[in-house]
Image (cartoon, rainbow, N blue to C red; front, side, top):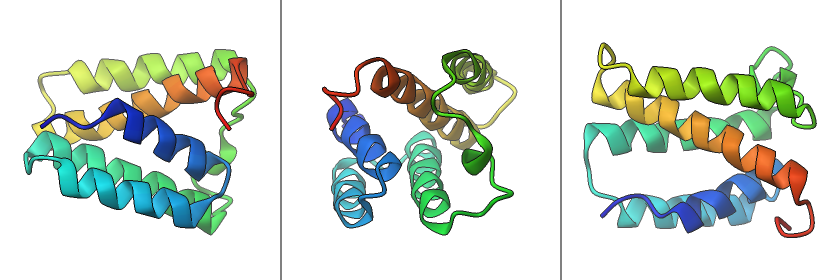
Length: 119
């Protein structure tokens, strides 16, 4: 079974809004429903890393230095993550990892454009 876009979108919304307990529950549901493939493992590890970074407030982490209100920056990073996710030189794990980050950028753009629908 592929990773549910609904769960992933909800996870990103909750993690970004620092609603960690709810985000962890959604992450656990994703883990239980997904097939064990290298691509899915990379994707899931990226989700886990996104959550941990939001929790830690590490000032040196990429995510903490990302301006989620800057649409051009989000689009630039999304293009780069998509490029890496499609690069056949990377292993399936890495492509899954970069795909999760590309999805996070996509959802962040959407949340920025439509703040009311992403609460």
